[in-house]
Amino acid sequence: MTRLWYGGDYNPEQWDPAVWKQDVDLMRQAGVNLVTVGVFSWSSLEPSPGQYDFGWLDRILDLLHDGGVSVDLATPTASPPPWFTRLHPEAMPVTPAGVRLTHGSRDTYCVCAPAYREAARGIARALAERYRDHPAPAMWHVHNEYGTTCYCPLAAERFRSWLQERYGSLDRLNEAWTTAFWSQGYADWTDIEPPRQTQYLVNPTQFLDYRRFWSDELLAAFLEQKAELRAQSELPITTNFVFGGWVPVNHARWAEEVDVVAIDHYPDQAGIGAEEQTAFGADLARSWAGGKPWLLMEQAGGTLNDGRRLHPKEPGRMARHSLSHIARGSRGALFFQWRASRGGAEMYHSAMVPHAGADSRIFREVAELGSVLPRLAEVAEGNIVAEVAILWDVECWWAMQGTHLPSSALDYLSAVRSAHRHFWSAGVTVDFAAPDADLSTYRLVVVPSLYVVSDVAAARLAAYVESGGQLVVGYFSGIVDPDLRVRTDGYPGAFADLLGVRVEEFHPLPIDGEIALASGGSGRTWSEDVQAATAEVVDRYAGGVLDGKPAITRRQVGAGTAWYVSTEVDRETMADLLQLPASQVETVEWRSGDTTWTFLINHGDSRAVVPARGIELVTGDPVDGELVVPAGGYAVVRSA
Ligand code: GAL
Image (cartoon, rainbow, N blue to C red; front, side, top):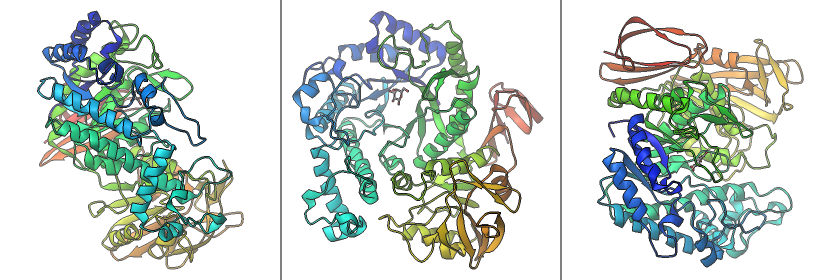
């Protein structure tokens, strides 16, 4: 992929064919070169079982192709038609409380139901056979945002097989799940159920294993469709990842199975948090992708939704969000959706062509960005250089969603986000890395609340420090093994020796409470009674029962240093520790040989003057020493 893709979800079946021609003309005007078609079209494509109606899709693909717009052709399996419910009631999903759902929304099926799997393979095969030689498709898009869970008897059966595979014996499972507690010992595989609604706290490892299982099961369903498409076509195959606490998908693992990593990104904050979230999502996607291409498949054009109401994006903000993704490696910027719907559950979701039509600020901004992107495509010749990694482990996130932790304020995602925010605010690019990844290329590795850690990962981190790495480990790390069994003889368990500390007791802080540090800083959320065994004390708690006890420590290990930060320290303390300056300009650097490309995105409300030399790609103007990036503006400088 050498060009940058620009476009969005296109749902022409919602419109009279008279609008289609106008759509393609407007797409050309806006510089659109890729649209996702067919994502939710199952009932239009297969109005009754085995009866296909491809006529409308033929006409749309021809029109788009004639207009120079490529297609990301989707399988519609995220929303089976009503006839599917009638024929296969057993394939409807069941909630943890045992309620069976029915159609009327979307995503209403159990991926473990054989009837669903067969129907999904069938429609994928029919699409691949019909369009494998059509010139419009540039990519296949399987399904939409895999992520729904079900607790039905069919899912229970699959879960048991998965557990047999993982544990081999009931003895091993009983040990891993600590079933001796509360009389949960299993003597028969068929007694094991999904973590359905029950009387009191659910078994934490059962809960975590259900997530692990569900990720594998959804992946198997994806791979079946992928195989149907691959049998007919060599085009790249993707599926759009959705990120959220409810999503039982291990994206880092799934990324190995797609040709292009695609993400949907909808920040849920209206203030500057939206920009931070944008950078966070983009850095995660790049990290999942490893060296593979990745693409922002969906974002909202005109609005931010904080869950209560829509906030219009101020002029220029849509472009900055798009640029932030591209700066962090996305091979383009796509939206949901092209034209705002007139009806249906998402009729007020923003679109590239809003209800007001093309004579609108939003469409003008869309067209302006479409004209800029081709000038930036050359950055793909380079690579993003990140010298810092933050560890990310989705299983740790899932494990910390259990209801058994010592404080409800412990929140893995916010700990990782806050680590990322420190670097983002300083204009420093970071990668996310798996705990057992090779970290040798990073000068600094940050480990926020890595509650669950395997022996292998702990040994890798120790080796990283030994050979010269700088490691900063955050509170509530190293506590349990992958079965969620506590590592005894003192927290932080797996990291106690490496960090040279021993913690006998946790001191969770009151919600919204603070603890003072001797340096003048403060901590929130959490604190611990830390003994510095072989570590040096860098900062201490001040006041209260922990007065004078270590809060931040440092230990020289081989050629490197391992730090421990036992509370959620304030921004300034962390910025000092990590030696990070403040910057209102989001900066990302790409390099290839002697050439450097620098993305500069100014989220502040005053202009920023940055040192730069070379050519600014948006304007084509030379830059000689200094560049002014206006408030809310952006620039991309190529320097030799
Ligand atoms: C995405 C989804 C789209 C649309 C969009 C609206 O999660 O893939 O189909 O629903 O959200 O926010």
